[in-house]
View 1 (cartoon, rainbow, N blue to C red):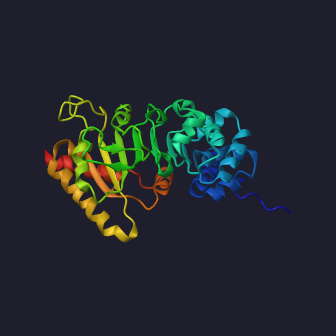
View 2 (tube, one colour):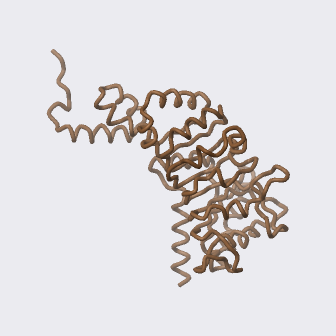
View 3 (cartoon, rainbow, N blue to C red):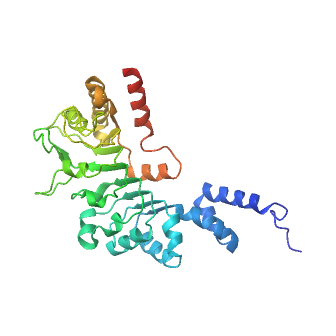
Length: 313
């Protein structure tokens, strides 16, 4: 005699709620549930595809194969968070980006210059309405271009290769390659930005706090210019500095964070919107945890800015 189905006497809507909750709670459970029946697969497949993390060439190829068997509309509408942390194949990365045109949060850990040289900017520019983009590790190690950031992006995090306060017109270098454009004009090409994070490793040649007045120049006053009357990022509300420090210089990184926050508070005005914190051990993991419902990348810094502004009144 066959055992009765445990949910047989429950309303279908309640069964669906239970199974979707189980799928949200554990990805392995979600994958197993897709094998139960076509109805359950229909419920849980969107949950599996909501956040996609591709960390190896093998996972990239497997995902390309998987979406080849899905309706294009399903992939376009259900993949909301996409992290690509493998260097290639570049052609496969391009196929994924074109298929996942509805993505809202995109984290890139592959070389953007190499990708752009091989595939151009069509896939990234055709993303419908990306809100958040993270250029991590190899993504901007050899430079980046604003055309690789979606025009609707409001939250951007990138690695700052170097900072040189002796070059007031172009202190930020987003590339270690000779002849590369520094970064001011690239940032100003992104007028939708409200949140900017830079992953920053201080050097012994430049005082860490020297970065604060230069970052203040990006922040707008009520007239959409900075304190010097220069054009800036008209919507920018927060600049987050994530200070990198290895285990051997962890105390220096901690002291740098304190010094940066003290300098921002001392400067007052627009600088109150500049917040420093220690960089996470893995920016990619921090991104993944945030899009899966954990603490957001920006939450702590936003709370600091609110507190500062309240005290300044």
